Image (cartoon, rainbow, N blue to C red; front, side):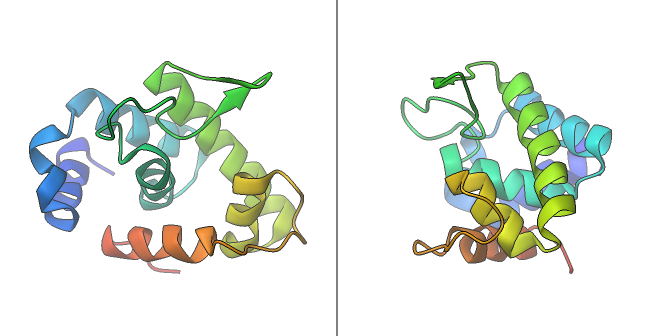
Length: 132
């Protein structure tokens, strides 16, 4: 996905945060999605759920990524690790809802999703143009 198209879609989907969007974050998301063959709207939606794409006050990690129980502070590395994890979870679980629940909880493909994280992320991804 072209970075300018991604910025435009994000700005249209979330107009209240549009003035806070950073091109380096959008570029990191689209690069990570392309590198790991994950739909860019899925990666962007996960990062939106985790940090409002870096616009949330005092966010710990762009995409909620932790390594050895410490949040990954680099936005580019966080996006890259998130896309890699999402690709692996999707291949392992067979569906995006299960892959997203696994991503969020770390408890495997059969874990329950009481907070409806997967459904919420997929709703955002649809707003960004993703079609299953």
